Image 1 (spheres, rainbow over the protein chains, first blue to last red):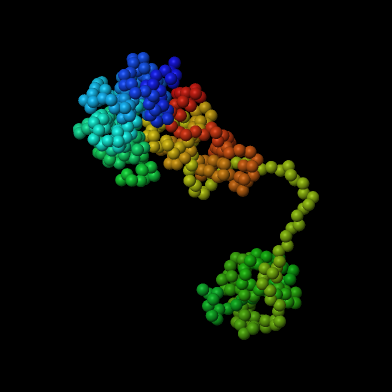
Image 2: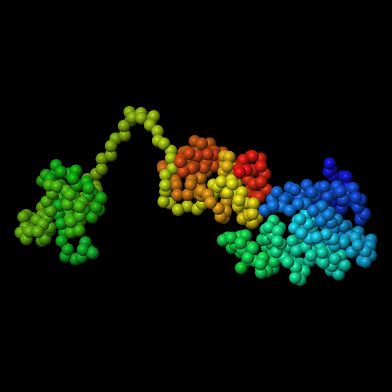
Length: 209
Length: 248
């Protein structure tokens, strides 16, 4: 069973998923395998609930990607508050994702990764030249689905329009929801956005031309 | 216009007093004046066009004269037959021929008569606010639907295999569109046979915020307000699973 109070990491992630707030309970950056397992279990359930509202057929849950994103969000929030580490250590505490970035990984990671742009913005506001902000930025560049609407441009030459039907529609939905004009005006994406709104593009999104 | 042209002739109609009823069909022409003289009704102010109209032509026992130098000439004749009688008391025709309304019958107790309530085709153009679709058709659209199209819509399951979608803009799919009047939803192009009854009907049905949906065969069903939910892919998948229907 998953109950609050079992682990600080789990509590923070649950709080984040349920109220979209980050509440830190500890300054320890070491996470035990049991904690990681609990959080993975929790995220799996969250994914099942959320994927009910995904169009087409939702891809399977990708546990390593979901856990990686949860750790990334948790630790980067922790590092903003309690920095007891050298700058060189940062990239080993917050590694980049090692697996393949397919639709399943992108959607599973997005459970927590969607909150990263806000954390990145917060870090940048505290200290513009902070290496942590730079690191988070470089990660977001690789994850355009999570970064939608944050104004962070995707990596040069990256294929933006996903091949997976489910992820593609979700990506277009997010662009419309966040009113991300820059993404919406890109060739390829633009037609998809128009197609999603059909005849009513002026009703839903006046600024889009 | 010939009525207003200067020097145009004025026509006079004379009819026996016993034929008074026959004048009823022209009593709404407000340019006419009427007078009673020596057992005959005199009607003055007729124009040439009115004399030629069916309203006058269809009156029997009448004599038509035209008036010149206060002499009366029968129609088509150049010889006057008599002078216009003087000192006639002219009154507007609708006052000279007052209406007599039938008395209400206080002893009428025909309260058992009823009328059927049905809907009939109507020509009034109305905005569609709801769409009745099959669950199978909705599934086909909704499983691939962009979120933005579902956001402004609410929905409810109807019976075993249909669903009703409310809101605007509606989904681009096949279905019966409905328009709304008060708490009633009518199929597009239809209205109550007696629209004046819609208030009484609504009161009688004790809707308490619910809606009544009329179908083309004049049957209707009730939709409770609480049953209407936000339309989303998750809502559809959960409900259809729950209802255990529309799986085909």
